Length: 219
Image (cartoon, rainbow, N blue to C red; front, side, top):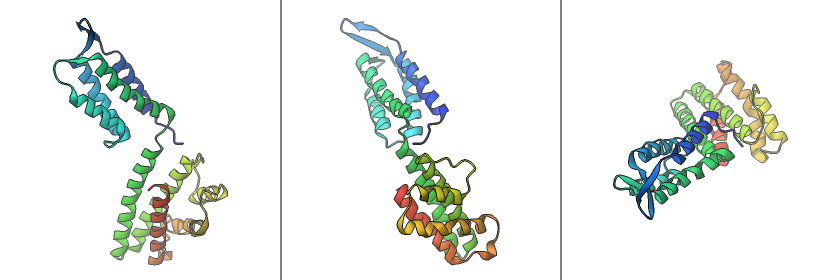
């Protein structure tokens, strides 16, 4: 499970405390109300944090946004305030528990997909060296991120060492395992400027492999 950056944890802690300290006061015998200005200052920051960390399509962001948009007038009923705070605290519990695997893989897959698209375009234009470099960069990063998600230490490790670690733990197998064994050699040619040793077939091989790897593990 990936570690959550400390700045994210600290920001969610800060917003949880801020939201819990929004002042409420009586406006009638049966209901307490929060001041509009204090609530909106908090909710704007909370929505920004949820959008940044979980994305605009996440349940946490969508639910809080919907609750905020329902509010009218100068004061917010305390039960409505608590509902909004509860949604945010639900997101915070996911942060505290480290449950951001889906976010990590989705973002990674999108970024790597851009690299692969660029590599395919370069290959189509006859620039197989550029295509191989791009595809190898995407594959190496994808392998290291996947290994990290599986609690493998990749700090300072070569691509070949990461590949061997994945294979030894049975995290890649079958045809993928056999094809992966050839990737470090092509990667070394690409990254060490031994470009005369690269062929269009090498570029196509890496592109095809990384596409399949991304669909399998980051799709």
